[in-house]
Length: 239
Image (cartoon, rainbow, N blue to C red; front, side):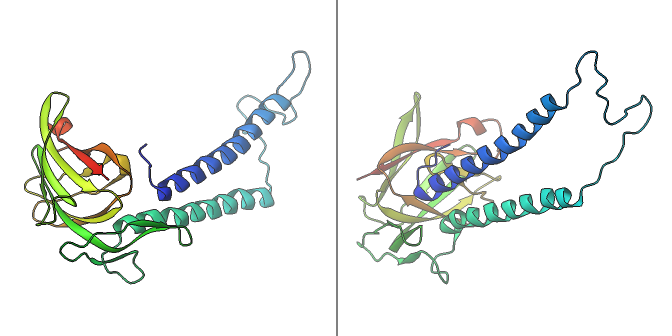
């Protein structure tokens, strides 16, 4: 999983912790009862008086049943709550009330993406707008007259094949304007762990927060025909 941003790193670690706690408790309970209540050879340990063809005795414990229902419910609500912030930080609309990113950058103005420890989100005073178009079976990028240092596109060789290449500037916030010319595609920025379906004739938006200097792939995660597996592009984030 390419969870490189602090938002997703923290969420991933929290899910791991809760998975270990819940899994340890559940399987610990299971194994304890499995071995503690197992029958021993030569000893009549049929405490429930089980008989072939007879329905077992039904035990009721209201407190246990309520706890087994309520506690997981609160845990699920809590996990849903903490999962919302990363999604909101990636899919929130530009200039939305209480949004994390400022106005669109003016010509020549640099975006200043930074991590706010107090709020636990990415922020920027302004953002750049770029275009991404998917078609069977490739990608087309548009930098909308941004300076070449901020956004540029070309061709890169990936495993012996020439593929589209998008180059972005580190520590910058980008709002992608994405669409398709034919069937449904789903661009996935592999290292950022985010993706969005795009449809013919419709515009979808998604934040790309270029935080680290790195190279990774943009691939399609919605089956779109014979060459779906080869619908890839290179993404480079430079200093």
